[in-house]
Image (cartoon, rainbow, N blue to C red):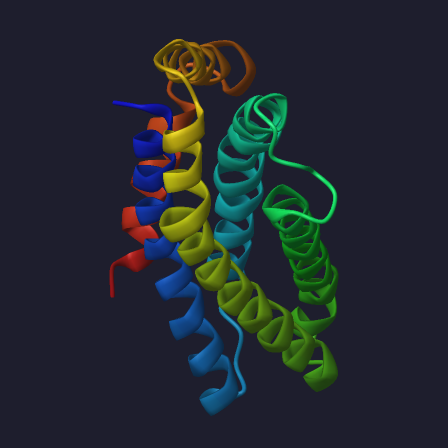
Length: 181
């Protein structure tokens, strides 16, 4: 599997949890109740799989390699992707910060969770579309076969050494658990 194919596959897993998060937001808004444990599991998935695992591969490997091949970080698609990663982290922090108050029945905190989680879902869906349809095809055009092989090896190394053995699979299972009715 090429590096961009790996990232697209990870986007498919992330999209499953985005769908579950959207359903949770709709449920919160219609019932006024929070499934705090489920939201915390989603935050765990988004922070550790989407951000730490997936975005690390993009930010520390793919984007760097693309910049080496002439794609600018500032004012270009890589800068946009980095800005969106940071905005997503903001939405996750805000969601997490509101959970303790929402657990105690604070309506404003419940709204904060629904708003921030909903914004995260919208942001990431658009972000994934841009990467899959624009950025990754661009990477496939400008990166040499050696570059692509190096990225695939680096992704495997990140999985084994920085993320840890079995962690990727753990989050795949969690994604499927979160999408179950």
